[in-house]
Amino acid sequence: MMEGVIWKGSPNHYNGRNGYQVTHITLHIMVGYLAGTDATFANPSSQASAHYGVGAIGEIHQYVDEANGSYSDANYESNNSCISIEHEGGMAQGAVCTQACIDASARLCADIARRYGWDHLWHDGLNGNVWLHREIPGTDHAGCPDLAPNGLPYQQVIDKANAILNGETNQERNTTMAEMLFNDLDTGKVYYWNVLTGTKYIGVPDQLEILKAAGIPMHETSSKGPWMTRAQEITDTTLAGITATINAQAAAIETLSKSMGADPEQIAQAVKDAVTAKLDRLQITITATDGDDQ
Image 1 (spheres, rainbow, N blue to C red):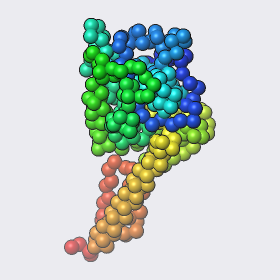
Image 2: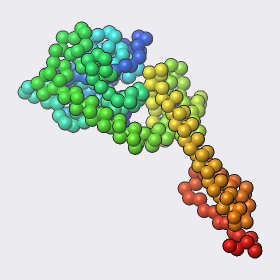
Image 3: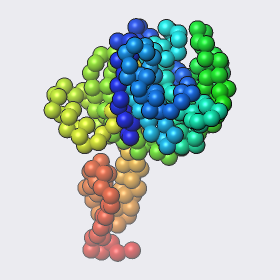
Image 4: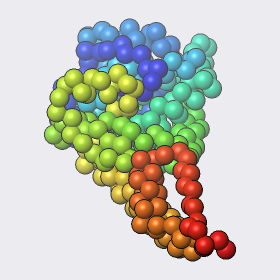
């Protein structure tokens, strides 16, 4: 769950996704307020829900676990293959879709995209990975989410989400992916990964609880979101870079040490050990032997 999301819980959902995988986000407008949506989704007789709801001040409520399909899109296939997001607003007199709501939705959409392995979000009818409720066969909500009064400017949400994703791709992703947990939805197993050790299976519940308590983020992965494969690629690339750095430094120091009469093998090993141990700073003193002063 994204940081700051408030769990509300709704009884209205499928148990699981009935064989479907998550392929898209569906955007909705509440035509009302977040509190009213909370009440509606908490009522079993409503037979309505969404995975998330975003309020006017940017608060995010979660009603349905992403492992389950929601009763949101009036379409069985889409219900089971989407992450659905409701937004406060949609009223000519009353609830409006605020900038805080738009910004929070963009952060949520970026988080969803990142967890499911989508590099960017786009809307193209039912061909993109962002759908509008009004476009889905079976719905009678012709204005949802953007054509209602004070509706959701969905393209602004998409653009802001992509800006977040691009920023993470260029600057933050290495930090984000320096250490994490993977919940493999296909096997039910949990793995720990960091950039140097690679992926390790966590088979002891106490170990998992310790890692979670330490604040290490959990990501869900499956054939639709191959996080572990991408993480291992980062590990392989990083270790290859470290190996190349060690070899280059060793060659340079060997040349220098020979010219000054020091033992090149001893110094090269010192450099290798220091870099491998990720020392922040490496200081080596090369002492010339008597008579070799140049």
